[in-house]
Length: 287
Image (tube, rainbow, N blue to C red; front, side, top):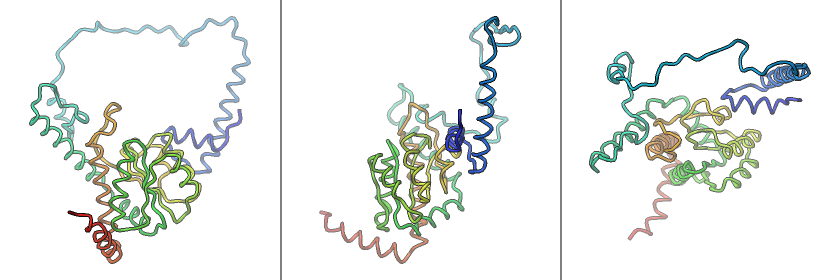
């Protein structure tokens, strides 16, 4: 089987690996050699060989599955340099909680999400992201599913100060815009997981066209991060059944606010004039 450089690069992205073009080419050759060896093994006569799962006999030795007292969680955490008291998003909200207790827990979770995001802010990455945004001819705010709502929030925030920001909701239209992007454009993409097919369908053509990619995600080693020029990390843990949780959005919104304020600080004259103009445009709509 012929393994191309593109196939090797795709396998690397799925494995959360970032390879140069030279490394991807070398990997393609090595994978092809491995598969060629499989063809050699496939030619062996195994008609008289008994099927087995291991070359030596194995037998699991398991104790009886009996309930026993567990160690105290507090005692276990004493050896840790730091401990996160949150047990997943909303994990501590119980049916017997009062509304007040529930509100306090949700408040603590949302505040913790912003705190976790703050702890991961990289000043150099924020500065590079704002530099790309400031120089861009067009900035596309993209996301899919729940992350699209965040992308729209970014667009709504930045459009008050900069006309080059756009938001496209349909994933097909996003892919088409990416396919026509230029090195003067920026893709500002929001994806908590950084690992969805629709997202890659947008980022791959943008990367080929030379557009800058700024990714806001929770996972630094995701396939999307491997293609991004700048990756900004948000805090808050989100399980598979908690997609779109408010706490995860709090971290993403905090990064939008950081980018917007740094953009305005970097371009004070332009943004002040634009913000006055847009505020005046909507003032007449107020009762």
